[in-house]
Image (cartoon, rainbow, N blue to C red; front, side):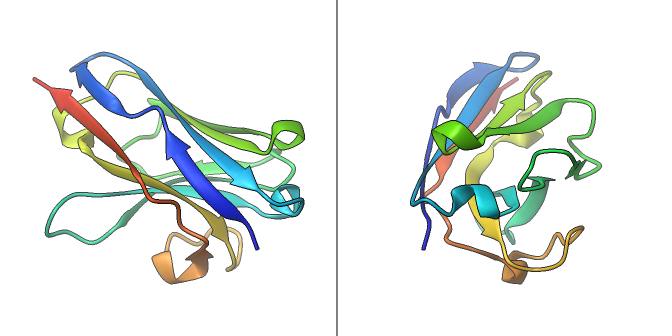
Length: 124
């Protein structure tokens, strides 16, 4: 079982950048494809990005494509989300999770071992 802890959230002005980190415990981290999701109050948790267990493939939500970059360091048991050109609509709590469904999924039900989340606030 993998346990996940997000960090790196904060307050940033529109157009700025932040990098989120997700620290994983357990020796099986490198076996999982991973994903990032985000959620705002009163809304469903939405998919942001995913990365293969060997980091050779990624895919993104259209809303963040070209601005966000997902990466991982299996030697350090770390997952990252580099967020550039941030917009106020990117404001949310961001979560990392392990992928249990088929590659290409964006459904929360296909992810597990959710972290506690990191707040990202983008001011206009």
